[in-house]
Length: 182
Image (cartoon, rainbow, N blue to C red; front, side, top):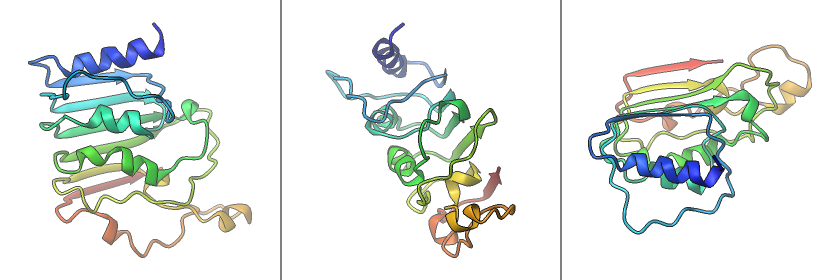
């Protein structure tokens, strides 16, 4: 199956009237991908949506994929470390997840272990302050924190995180649980 057919099929699944849970595996999102053309607005009834072993959720295609999920309560995106082809951009991921900010209550963003050597992120940080219903956040540390490249280059073996004085400001007001993992 070619890439465009798979993307089209995913969009068709979003439209299944009684579907409330969907898990998509091994999707390679191409950030510069042309957006599919639709003859109508997507209106999904899905409440739990999971993407497993996928490339990072960045770019306009992800933003379109996540639009129209007005009932979505739980969202999971597991990044397959073997599918990371460039530096992660936490700010670009936040932008792609923007359609979820008024519905999602539980958000899981992880990076699966593998043969990945951490190349760092682009120095940006994810910002969840506008996620008005988010109560549970499970997230990989390299998506939540900007890493200090000077400490990394010096060979420091600690966590590599810079002191994050604004983390509280980047979290939503109703957050009940925060899980940060390496």
